[in-house]
Image 1 (cartoon, rainbow, N blue to C red):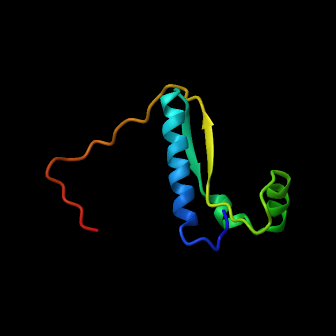
Image 2 (image 1 turned 90 degrees about the vertical axis):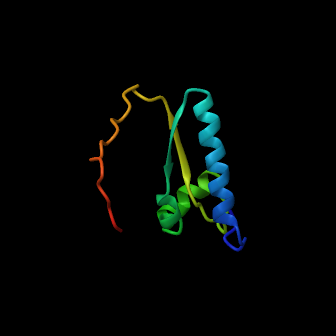
Amino acid sequence: NEPKELWAGQDCAAALQNIFLAARSLGIDSCWINQPALACDDPEVRTFLTTLGVPADHKVYGCAALGYSDGTPLSEKKLKEGTITIV
């Protein structure tokens, strides 16, 4: 996305969310990868992005990793009743 655009990050977040929802509806799991946002100006990373067709003046705010789960969901963390956490 063009970094000059005021809502560029939010636009990308909304697009990725829709990709994740659509993938899930097809039984495909997903993971948000945010590291490209921090590394997209590194010369080696920029060279790779250029081979993918990303213009040099664009910033990558996030990527989607898509695939099929092994079917083993993470167990839910059990909290003690009556526990209060102050942050």
